[in-house]
Image (cartoon, rainbow, N blue to C red; front, side, top):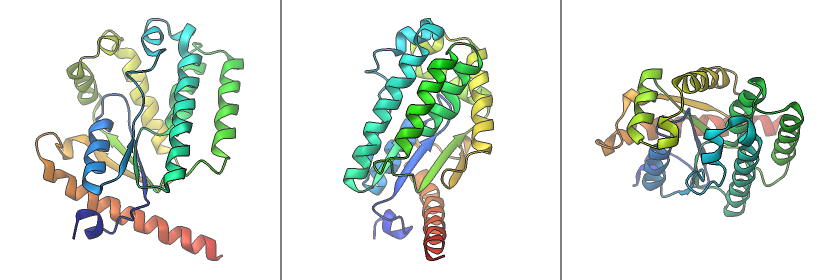
Length: 227
């Protein structure tokens, strides 16, 4: 019996990994996908044509960056729908609108017109049949110092040169966002409780929790459909 069967994780599950920059979403995505033999859906960072310009000038490029991410994320959602699930997603589409676009609008680095255009696009996308909602959102969290330390350790120059005040604001916005998120069930995991890079077996306690949450979620959905 493999670990997916052991912890009763359906092979059509859709699991999204969320959390602020540097918290280890990609590492968790790869570890879960490898163990469950699921496909992955990664955020296209390295091929993003706007990212470097964005870090140099938020006001000039924030709308372009967010629309690019939104379009790429929607294409991934459509692919997940066509495959019938069995995916681990690196970051959710909900973070794009609930944190990043909102932050730029409230800070004055995205105009009201651009923000309204962006949110209208998002709302139109999530109402289509090609938008499968996740069975579970895994939220990775840790202290601000841990997160900043990981960003510096990762070593992307455009991130290392970004002021700490930006990362602190994003960290606080993530905390507020997850406390009010209700689009799907949430499993919160502290990044200090595991080390997937050095201890591969630290994934198993996470899988046990994932299976429990998804089973609960599906039972709840079944009861709702019967009403």
